[in-house]
Length: 371
Image 1: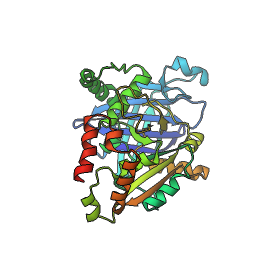
Image 2 (image 1 turned 180 degrees about the vertical axis):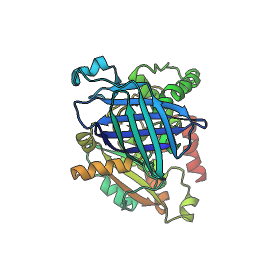
Image 3 (image 1 turned 30 degrees about the vertical axis):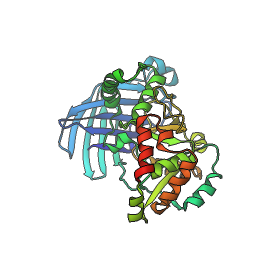
Image 4 (image 1 turned 45 degrees about the horizontal axis):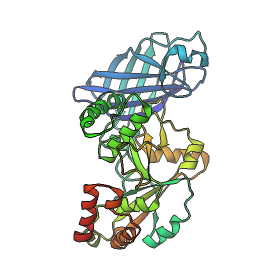
């Protein structure tokens, strides 16, 4: 049952459900999101924390049902949002949920409320594998440099030394419950890091929360962020980082991947939200503060925040709907490694410049003296 599930439901109401579930050994936790197709009807969100059940069929009650603001897509009080809806409407106090597994990638769901409403339907798993679904442009290093001049100002870049699918570190760990992450994981990390940072991050402040999440991301802690850069050459550095000369000689046919995301088109056709918990699929480019994070400026860093398990599929649907091209990728062979590193070094793009401090200096000298 663990994973992200999505599908349409119908009955007394028509809508869509997103179900995010974590397997916590002895329990299942996560979020169920319901969005009604009728804009005059409120959308709902509920957190579930239930004893681990038979993986093929379960019945459980939800009693803490939350109203969702139709604009921000975040939890709000009914008093705050009732003006957007019919004041005579009621939010249910209880929902009985029946879930049955149909096959590996499909479950059925039926939800019955205490106010006489009922919906049912099928949800499909949208958990992604490791392999990217994108068709790459296969370029040499010289071709990539020529192409780099053609990118629009609204393009951001991400380099990976393998052809993995775009996936956040949070989802890569097989985690989908962002409420547990926000309420338990992040406070624990904050408590542990407080002695290591001069600045005391205030998690209740949205800007501080974003900066803290970004700092954790840059130091390897799983987050719902993905690192990007405004520089195609910085992306190239990260794509080839960790590949030694010997690696390249032994595996000349292998390729690195550089993603290009057209931020302008993404933000034109998709309203991204900078909140962690929202009642819809979300992908947003966020320029976070670099508090306690000296790497951000030299790396020309930005980030995306997302609750989508399969980001590539999400973007593909957006592209097909509006006949646009938002996401592309370029593959460059490992055999170009020595040439790329040499030219990036001449540009001043080394571990020493991109990772200020002892670690970066040692990595740069390791490349110079031992690669």
